[in-house]
Amino acid sequence: MIKVFAVRTYQQGPSFERMKTTTLKPKYWNAWLLVSFLWLLSLFPMSLVYRLGTALGDFFYRIAHSRRKIALRNLELCFPDRPPQEIQMLAKETFRNITRVTLSSGIGWWSGRGRLTRLVQIKHSVHYERALESGRNLIVLAPHFVALEIGGIYLSMTSPLVSVYQHSRNPVFDQLTRAGRSRFGIVLVERKSDARRLIREMKKGVPLYYLPDQDPGIQWDPRRAVFAPFFGIQTATWATLARLASLTNALVLPCATKLLSAGQGFELNFAPPLENFPSGDPVLDATCMNQVIEDFVRDMPDQYFWVHRRFKTQPPGGQDYYTHTPFAS
Image (cartoon, rainbow, N blue to C red):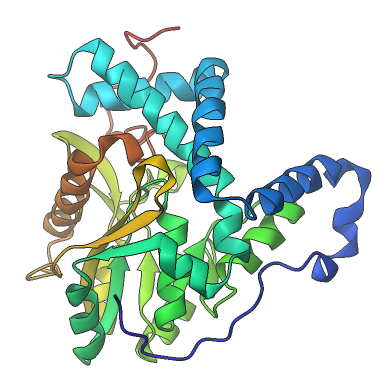
């Protein structure tokens, strides 16, 4: 069990009354139906939500053709020695896990402290406790596993926290997710905003819950991202983690949140802090980060966010990994 290092402001979760009136326009009614459905599911046992996610995940696996192909291709690239049948089973289970976690979002947004404490287990919590007590600033490296949101919400119950969020173009979802994630006082900084706010919060001693492992895409800039191996593939990798650690003299503590089977809840798994990080070499630091994430992925390959084109950005003349794949249908 993680010690509670600060008393956090508690809110019941996103309040429908506080939502802006512009979100009540008819074009947002479908979004409100989904929100109401998630709220209703938050009242049910996690085991029931898990079973529903299994059924709907199988459905989405069949109809989401483009995302299915991306997931299959990513898995094939990262696990070339596994037979096609196993790759397909991993992809299918990934869709199930994404759906299970999506349907359980309301549990993180509206459930009380008691229920969240019962549902979330901690593995190797001593690493987190020692990091908080070390007197240094802290970055929690949280890779894109499907249950990462509940990890951030849970940690914000136990200590102050700052994190980055991606703005949603749908104002209903945008307001709801921001309110749900910040209900225990976490400070959310929009992804495209000035990083100086993150640094200011960290220099106050607030840990950063950081998610740096997606493709930089068209924003790729050699001053901000480098190519480093991930599962043996040269992968465009943000170099921001090392820079933030250097600017704030922060420890970097890896943490992956796992969805447990049969609706038993979630598990936060902490690894030891990165050693000799940052090194001053951006490629070496990015390689170190990718290796830690790869180790987590090998432990739970069906829970990584494979539906993202992780290998999209390549060096000039590099291979296009997504145009022609063996899984064309």
